[in-house]
Image (cartoon, rainbow, N blue to C red):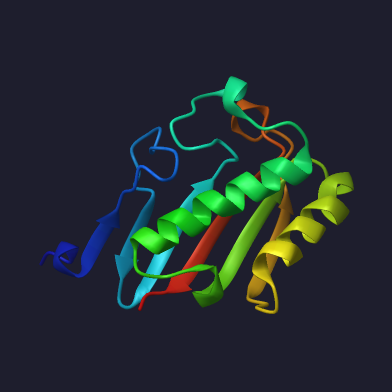
Amino acid sequence: MSTTASIRPISTTDAPVAGGHYSQAIVANGFVFVAGQLPIPPGGAGAAALPEGVAEQTRQALCNVAAILAAAGSGLDRTVSLTVFVSDIAHWPEVNRVYAEMMGAHKPARTVAVSPQLHFGALVEVQATAIVG
């Protein structure tokens, strides 16, 4: 029995292309599941593309999530859960400030996890789940 009929991969050039064997996001059963997004601008590649500083990296990672959500017919205001990975908990106040600025009054469930070895030496990575439509 195949379940792929109810699963739709999402791909957009408005966010970095998937760098491995995964989709930028998957839509299933009315939800969109966004893969962890590093703070790499669309079209960028590797450590050289990372913005300077944790504030700009947080902003870029959330912009990548927002672009993928838009491609799926959703948005940051439709998120139900986000996981924010930080390379050092000392970055948290600045990450939280930018996160609050970008999310506005919307406060989805959120998990913060320290992951000291994010790919390309990134300071932050964001994964999200949202409602589609």
